[in-house]
Length: 431
Image (tube, rainbow, N blue to C red):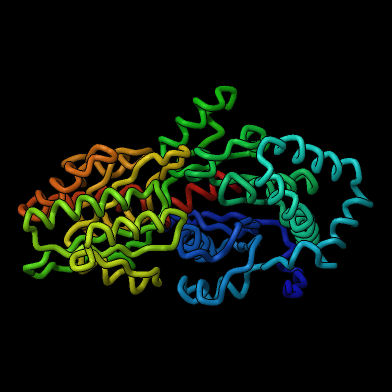
């Protein structure tokens, strides 16, 4: 059930922004509604970090999670405080949800029906997304009513699909601005109503230059100024590299959801080559279950890699840090999947660079914006197993190269992925 919440007089004050010129840091006192599919999510720690930084800067963030989360997900994300203050919406048949529907039906009947008709017409070619959008429509109206009562007029969504649709609905009903952050699959795989939402939004944030270029080429009528590139941020105090001990076993680390686009099947084939070459290594794959795991585990057993490759289930960020510290290199051979899905810049690559790990990956999507070949990592041809194996072997043999790439990688992400700086930029675009 949705927790009862009554806004205080302070909550209803108009937003204020102040500038501390002594520290040259912009401080914000604002209220923003964040629309997220599921919060917190272990695979979306970048959103968690963003919200934590917003709150640290004095921004009052009302988080609306369109779906509930499992208890263990909350615990793994170490976000008890944020989870307890998040609005988890009840099932769409709940009386509380439909009270808001009838409120807008009575006060804004034409607008409500126009929104509904627009969604249906725009989604006819994508029945699955249509059903999901219709399922959250009453929830969107409930959020709109809550925000109207709380006098919150800034709405930001993460992901260009259903969350952005909900933000658009709220903006239409409450006559307010909305913004959204577009990431990867939500623009590469799903184009339903995307152009309309981009035109309607006051600003679009995306996390790579590749994404912006892609959107402008896909929708040439969009003004390029509407799309701003802001990289995800890291708190570097949480990502502190340590001295590596000399070991006889070379430790390879890879992290991600078991989907086709991550290229884990190519990593396994490369590990098979490394083993046949006599390289003493241990490859740890820390994974979140995905729709390609049957193929991956099948290949894993067929190649007989049990003695040199370990699959380790998902874990909290604090525990993950120890695996970064213990690794000698990080490998994620991303590809473009058969359905067109691809990564933007995987956040685990940013984290690995921050931990001064030399990275072996591909030039898919926005990855070359941070992994520059022979400068901050080694780029290999997408799907080329032999190149992956050779790159790892090169790092195994050249300790000086590992150190050089590691230091350069951390320096680059410190310059471009500072959480405080990037959230300041975000606020200047969405407030």
